[in-house]
Length: 504
Ligand SMILES: *[C@@H]1O[C@H](CO)[C@@H](O)[C@H](O)[C@H]1NC(C)=O
Ligand SMILES: *[C@@H]1O[C@H](CO)[C@@H](O)[C@H](O)[C@H]1NC(C)=O
Image 1 (cartoon, protein in one colour):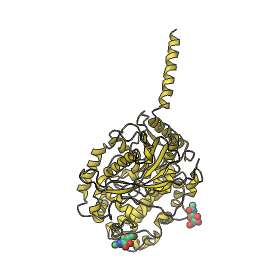
Image 2 (cartoon, protein in one colour; image 1 turned 180 degrees about the vertical axis):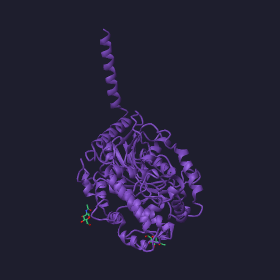
Image 3 (cartoon, protein in one colour; image 1 turned 90 degrees about the horizontal axis):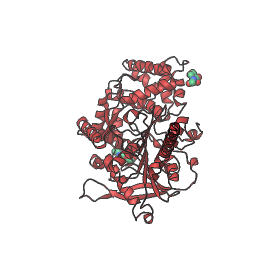
Image 4 (cartoon, rainbow, N blue to C red; image 1 turned 135 degrees about the vertical axis):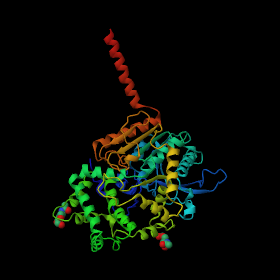
């Protein structure tokens, strides 16, 4: 079932979001050839409040969206945008598109405030970031839904519409939280890979990566990585070592092994994030291919083998930045058009609301203790200000879990999918649970955000079956016609008939 579509995904123009649940949603986007109608979606803008939580502040800003009216007659399907710029591919194909077709819905794709071209402020300076919170972004969506259902949009065509939200990763969290916060506006939710529990230290992330490498690439590959990291850390303590490592890994400048921040930067940008990118977006074959280089015994030195694989990845090109001061300088740029804007904005959200720092504090991973939690505390202070510190972070995480309930209870009419090899799975619902109103499907060996892609293009049979089940469940939430339950009732009445017959 692994189709050639994967091969067509362009490698150029990748958005690389380190720390982010969605490293690059664009790389997952169904290829344009998958579009059936060839129709060009409409780009639209709607004014929403800058601060939804101060009734006395009526200032607004324009929020961008895409709209595909191909199937529009009764309902509304919204593909929710997260920490990235929206692009038209997701209103042309994928599961949200198929749901729109099945429910005769207008299909929308909304852009999250501050990301892409939805810019509420003149720049991203710290004072301007105070309106960047998930609760403000949810309220934007609420206002958007109200607008689309009003007479002001398409002459009131959607006045009576049912509303379904589809989101993956952080946008899946948002979709789930929309049902919790605004049940009067949202009738059905599909969250793919959405983390729901905010947490400061997130060592489980690298544990899942380790498990995926072990299962898909073999113990031998894992041992080779472990050996390489051990030898590399030793090498970096010698006088010639840093120079050799710099050459092997093609770093942008010689590694300064005396700086703990530079060392953490090297291991983070150069090594663990490269594995994160591999596993978070793996399709079958990706991990074994990487492992064939990492375990290639015609190269005797395991560090060299690791370097050979790392430097062959497009995102480590042209060189790996190991200077922490350089990382700070680029992320302090407050222009919306700076290369690191998305990363600056998402880092801000992690510093004040979510944490989710992918450290090496677990012993069940091969990267030793190269990336401590303090590295991220330092990053928050250096990118923003001294008061964006761990006290603020901890208070923010507590607030997020208080407001949205963490993993304590899923709201109803929410369908969740998690891949068992998705490194984000420990932060979301991750136990298979066939609850009628809030089912959770855990798909074995699947990575992040795979279930929002089109049916008929799935890497495993089980993923394909899950997509079909999600569509059915969502359709029944939207239409109120419950095909699954009526089948159950039919079975139940047969049982009654049979037992009545047996009685006679
Ligand atoms: C293994 O290394 C040798 C020598 O560098 C190289 O010729 C060969 O292509 C490598 N094989 C793989 C699978 O990387
Ligand atoms: C910030 O980024 C913008 C856009 O890339 C660039 O023009 C500007 O020179 C940068 N500012 C600084 C201070 O580096």
